[in-house]
Length: 296
Image (cartoon, rainbow, N blue to C red):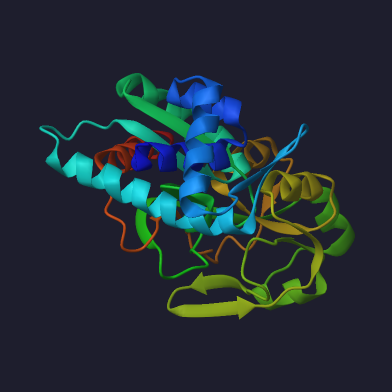
């Protein structure tokens, strides 16, 4: 048995969720993948995957082995890239991105990326939940806003301007705030992806004000916050690329224009201590160029 091949097959079974999907990805028969995993289990004297007629479940031992196997597979790919004659992007790339930003920016950028680099296989997972890059087996995570984990390697791709917004109807009913501290008596729509208790930050000249608001509604999805703001249920801080059309058409009003909301960084994050491969760098480059053209 080729241990590296069997280990890589196990990693693909865990990441793709089935033997058949892993077999298709590796371009081998499903029975071959099953034999590799069985041989691996025999050598390790441990059950890695519980198999029933209806489902496959990774065991606790399998989860521990996956973490190590994924690191080895990634290190091997990086080592192979270093000794290759060229730096062409190639191989498998696993990327995480938030749902709305992913749909509007990462997906169209990925189209350009795959057309430009035909030797790359891209696995894009979109979720607004926090994901652990190492546990999730991600090579790269695209995030809007400061990362919650400061140990991650971060490359800033763009900066996203933000607005404090509400509808004319809400303002007619509840009044228009003239100072940041007045937001404490308003219904606020808060992104729950922020660190708990994070204040809204406003700048005016050299002065910075941090206002803690109470959430009438909280969500980890920007489109959900936009829907609530459009329904006149409160005040929200949202990205320019999400609300520009509503502002142009008067459906939303930008509040406290004399104050500046710090722009949110759009970052490509990777695990610490892991060398960025040509494929990772190329994807970040393409996304950065796309964001610059779209002014995200």
